[in-house]
Each structure stands twice: as structure tokens, then as C-alpha cells.
Image (cartoon, rainbow, N blue to C red):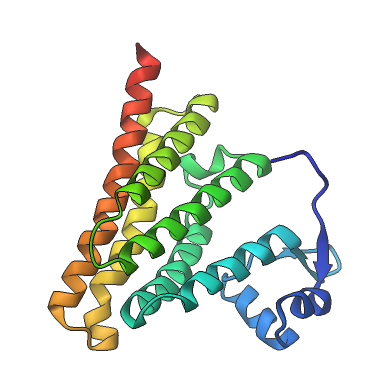
Length: 208
């Protein structure tokens, strides 16, 4: 966070910003795909930063092959729905708005790495190194808040469950070949393993 004031747009302005019809944006907001603030008068307000993050996610999705694109879209939707359900969980309730923004930015970066990594046939060591940096940044945030390692990992396990559950369900919802889905799961797990190990290592270093 830079400390700069947040910029907010009305539904009509936000729809124009994304280049979609207001009805489409209203549906996305109601489904939890785009964060939205309701004013006391019941009007929707959208943060420019959230709109740009949403647009960037969709730009990356369009660059993925078929299976990976399908997974990415469904995984993002599932993660957003689960965040609403778990908003009172201790590992999430401890964050103020600035902390939540930091976590959203880390989540966006991690999804970007995942999308790049699963699109590769093999390799991607540089992307795994970036994933470790995200794990370290997440751990530094939770250490600053005084959260125990269990809470830091719980946030990552929540994210992991949303992503892998979506992949597990693809064969049923999209008639994906088992071998293709197994490869997708291996690539997802490789990135998430790197993140979680970095979280644990950062906590170990902090205790020394």
C-alpha cells in the first residue's frame, strides 16, 4: 500500500472502465467475482485497483490454452466465493483493510505465476523462485501481525483447497482426460508447495 486515497467508481463508471454493460458488472459483483462496496443508500461503488486487478486476471486467462483457461476461470470464482464464506475466520479477521489489500496483491501475483507455470509443458524454475518470494512476503505479513504459523499456513491451505478442488472437479464438469488433469494438478501442487515451504522457512528463521 502506498497510503494514497482509494479511487471509487459508480456502477456505470466501473462498467465503462472495464468495457462491459452495467448489467454484466452487476452480475459479476453479485457473484463475488468483483469486490464491491455498498453505500448506506444501497449504491454500488467499485475500487479502481480492484477493477484493474480483475481485468489483468482475465487478460492472463485469455492467454492460456483451453484446459488451463477453464481451470483458471473456475478457480478464481471458487476462491472469491470461499473468501466470502470464511471472512470471519481468525486468519482473515485479523487483517485490516491495508493488510487485506496486501494479501489481495499477493494472491493476484500468485495466480499470475500459477497461470504461467501450468501453461508450460515443462520447466519453470524461475516461476517457482517467484512463488517462494510470495510465500516469504505472506509470512512476513503474518509475523508482523503476530499470527502463529498455523494461521499463516491456514490461509495458504484455504487457497490450495480452492484451486485443487476446482481441478479435481474438471473431469466431471468438462470431460477432461484424466492424464491431462493429473498433469494440471502436478503443476499446481509444485507452485503451492514452493509457497508453503517458504512460509515455514520464514517462520523458522524468525525464531532463531
